[in-house]
Length: 313
Length: 283
Ligand SMILES: Nc1ncnc2c1ncn2[C@@H]1O[C@H](COP(=O)(O)OP(=O)(O)OP(=O)(O)O)[C@@H](O)[C@H]1O
Ligand SMILES: [Mg+2]
Image (cartoon, rainbow over all chains, first blue to last red; front, top):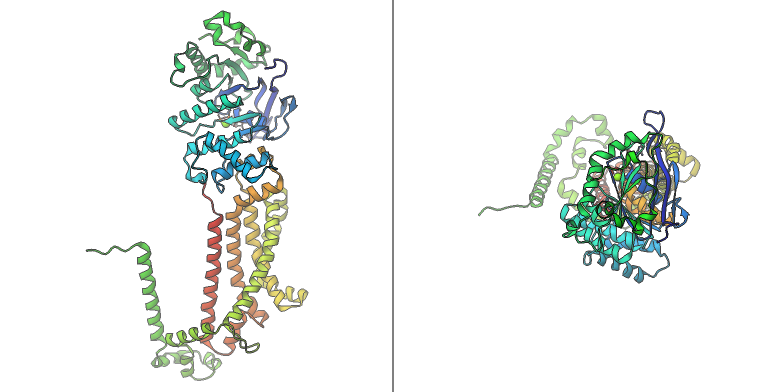
């Protein structure tokens, strides 16, 4: 893990849309700065419309920023790339292809020179990984919502991207199915050391999966207001996670942000000394001050001015 | 015990019943005694029909005579006794060949052009006024122009089929391509799929149901238009056959030709129905 060169670096990102009334453009978010290190699982949460999907689309190269830069692996992101796999909220499977064909389509895009059988075997490996063996010849319309989302996951993982981008991948699923797929994702990410950027509205999902949770303030002019270090030890078990001492401090902090602080931040934003770097919350600070020297916190951005320091939960 | 009939059994019975009623009405209308009714016929029309009222009545066949004609004609569809006496199979083959020629030509032009229009807003807006202007023109209106420039009757008929098949295919292809779900295009962008592969593996299958609907409409129109076109250009084909038999005052043959036009049209339509089902997908 290199402190000087993070795997993904986002600098001063901003996105404005032309105003519907023809006036000055509406800035959805600006001064967005964050870094993601190799192998890190980062979740983003914030209120609807603050610009999370827009940020993800810019990272994917599907949308372009009005200002700022994104660097991945030292190179600037300027368009879509096989280096970044995307899992879409609406699964985005091609309904005229079977499960196997959907995944194979991605595999063939990644390795055009491969032989048919090799593509098939590779695709099957990932279909098995998400527990869909036996359903590979079904069309998406014959699958349940959870199964479709799994195919989307298999497709994104099958191209072995350097980074995975997920936009509320489980938003449309029922709680039970969501839990099962989250467990699978946790397992696959642990196996593959995948770097992940994931949008979620589900606080518990963020706590279960992530290493870092980024909190966005409300738009317009939304920002990454805080970054929470998720210090819960791995491997994590859904059933036992709430017994961890850091669990409730983190959860309360997140909920508190979403309920009240995300709005306050908007009022402070225009203050002349408003920071363009987010504050960092580390539950270890609360419980064991000695732990705050752990290396993870060293590479986080500078802490902002005291008056927007979070009120400790 | 009560008999339960399925929906299609009921429909089948009703169809047979309707056919029986039709035959009965037909039989009653063509009974020899009914010739008195023909006295009301416009005398000029009667004269045109070749004389007395009696011959008018007898020239419209009874169902039995009609069945005999259908049987005779269908048992030897491919005979050829010179330009004015060819089997129905040969005449239909001429018409089908013209329709197929014009239709395929139109597909070759309309589908790539529709792709281009559907992919580009600029191109769409540039071409749209022409399409809107040309689309409502009756294809037969092109006939004199075609005869003048091409100087070949059969090729002119093919050109008319080409023109009338063009618009539905063009419009549907453009529409289908323009409405491919953004998600699928985004997927192919993130997978860095090259443009040609994207066109054939993503856009074409996504738009195929819409394109096929356009082809089905085109084929339907082409089959309507070929009869009229062949009446104009003459020589061969089912349209010419109808006109020729009218000149021969053979109402039986005209009726037979009408029936065959319907049968072939239905077959063409269901062929495209089957093709449409094959490319359909359920989201
Ligand atoms: N094409 C567009 N034109 C104008 N404004 C847009 C456009 N697309 C998005 N926006 C605006 O940008 C803002 C951010 O949208 P975005 O989809 O990124 O939100 P989000 O944080 O992902 O919300 P959600 O949680 O509901 O998915 C919204 O307020 C939206 O109105
Ligand atoms: Mg969104």
